[in-house]
Length: 219
Ligand code: E4P
Image (cartoon, rainbow, N blue to C red; front, side):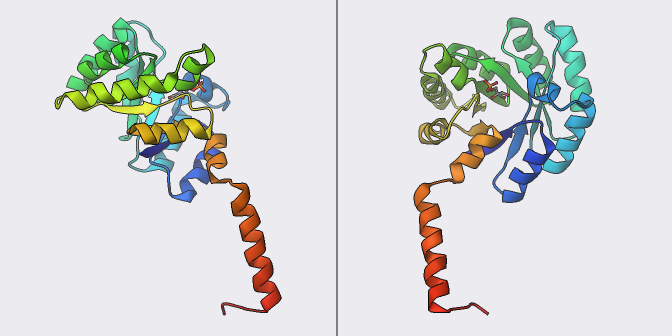
């Protein structure tokens, strides 16, 4: 499973990137708004950090023509930009056109397998089911990922990749991998949590103490 980091914060992206396990970045208007810098600057800098790896940047128009105009502009900022388009009828229409133009799209705000199928039919490179937000209203978000994966597997001509999104905790991350989500986009704090286990900390402490007691050295 590919791991994307779900943030527009440079420090977090650099730190996660240094770990060597990050395959891409997703942003959204709320995340970009927190950074207090022009959107273009944010996107260009993240794209530079990520090299060839995909960076999702979202449009804010809601009509097809407006989305197409914004998408063409945003995608011209760097070769690894993936344009995020919301899953509404005008958005699906825009995705159809953008895919014909060779612009990569992440179809966002997906909350059902039916919606995901429409995004895939339109040719979206990625579709992003929002798991945490579904759980928040008492639904089983992961079931949407599982059903979408099954639908995509049923048809050879649907090449869309699922990005499990709105990930709130490590269990979401693990379940995404168990189900076979192509990607999980994970907030930095959740990615950090994935490292931690109390037995790792205790175990390391004991190894180091035993090593010191024995007076051993590597060099
Ligand atoms: C995905 O691309 C979105 O940016 C993100 O996962 C939304 O998550 P939230 O529900 O925590 O805002």
